[in-house]
Length: 84
Image (cartoon, rainbow, N blue to C red; front, side, top):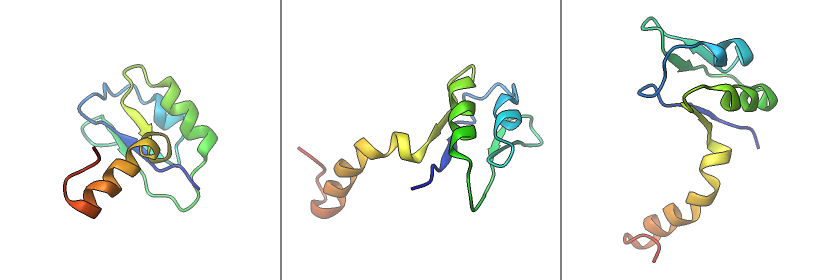
């Protein structure tokens, strides 16, 4: 399973560390803030380094942040009430 990088642009300060460590997955928009780039083969090691190096914690990956929440989300979809 490959990591799907995520970025919180509201937290981003434009340090561009992510773009230098994982240029296939992160770039910089015209506003100077992080953008997540589409790639068929993300470099999970580089993504992990970029996430760990972000000075404001604006980066995450779907594989690290969705795993615990997926069961609750599935419960919500199944019964419409969410997990108890």
